[in-house]
Length: 93
Image (tube, rainbow, N blue to C red; front, side, top):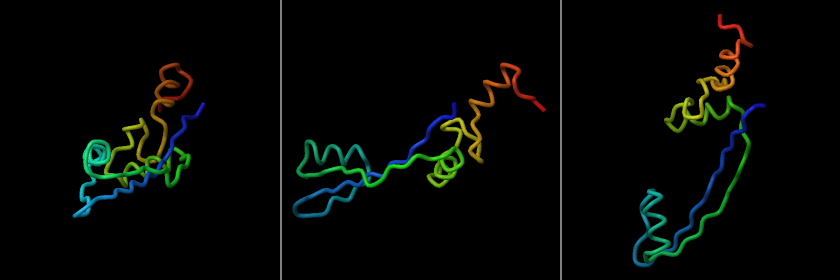
């Protein structure tokens, strides 16, 4: 069964007094709206299911490696391939 991959885009709205909030660090955002002097809300902007090929593309765009999800640079599933090669169900050459 093929694995499922998802892309979720969140939006963070922060309300502050005296100066704008200027950090993109998620720990600092959390601290500011939970324990700090800011009010905030997180909303889901979009969510979509991706193919392995699309996920590999997005990982590369984020300066990450497709192998993070055991994919090659073209989105081929390395886990699936490894399981079948080990079981002798796929040709190795």
